[in-house]
Length: 489
Image 1 (cartoon, rainbow, N blue to C red):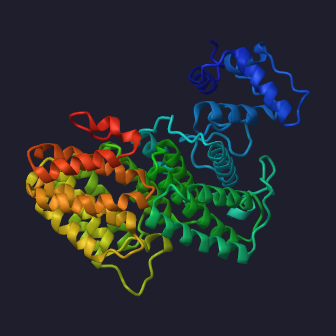
Image 2: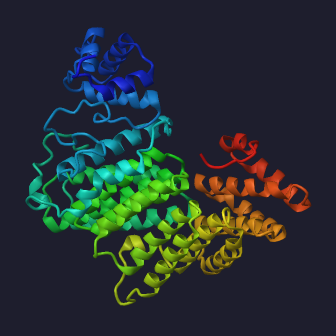
């Protein structure tokens, strides 16, 4: 192959398993169905796209993105295929080439959400892509997050949407932006109560519309508010995607959210978006990468973040340390989190995206950190129990998913602390609430607890609990229960 080979397209082509002739025929069929019967692609042209880096004319790149998305069961954009023409908005949806200009962020946002929605409609959403390493994320975005956005004001960096599709969007007005801001609060509350599975598609659709609105020359103040809406919706889309196991999709939404927050001038929101990616990494068993991302998130926030925001970030860092068995670092970081939390000035209202982090969430994260450390140091188990009980005592009815996490942390800490009777009681409370939640993460945590019950094979109550849990586990997790370990992978 020559040095001009489109390696992105070549890699995805091999992954899809088509022949060049098959791909040519699929493009022609899809073009005819889309109202372009005159388009005639053949094997030699496909070879030139791959081996010579030739960029096909419109609408072929979009058709190819759709075909690869359907084939692979995950979002594949024009940028992923390496088919964006130089100088066009939306150039390269990757972790390289930052900072993105505002037009590019809006274009990337709109295209990615559009492809995600297409997968939803066809029932083909999958997780068939690799997560970028934490170091790749942090290396790519570190300088960008610290830099002050340059150039002319955000509104002046637009050219009325030329160069990418608007998806029939219209200019935004004050009432529309206010309605969008209210919808974010509704979606956020729903996610906390029921998990990300049921409303993810609605959030992605709303974000897609906002991306179109951002293509227009709105007044600067209104444009900043729109970027804030985009950042909030992108974080929600990412968190909901993570909640249902769509990990690469979640990561891209967190990156988009960081870009959108920076365009809106909200450095703390950009840093918090990256902290979500860090929390995702800890959940997936990559705490070292999470710590890299937390360094990035802190640097991105600068001195603008409120104490309570910094406290939340400290709890994520502490969880990462606990996952690595670093008890001293974990305790030190949790101590910082507590000091920051109580130092918050009650007369300064937190941003809307921080209002979900209250005292119960602080205790819940402390319980999770100590419960995680207890796998390395059993003396941490009683402390985890104490924090979990504090969190449960403060949980309101609107955070059913968090209550489940607290119950699982408590039951797991009891198992690690040699208190099987209390573990049995609390685990059954968690199991009773699982059916009302669409969060896959709760099942992942429950699987970890199931692993811990293995040490009590002779305990009658725990043996019955294990049987009941096995019956209730989703099919996707039952195979892992038979393994001796059952850890997350």
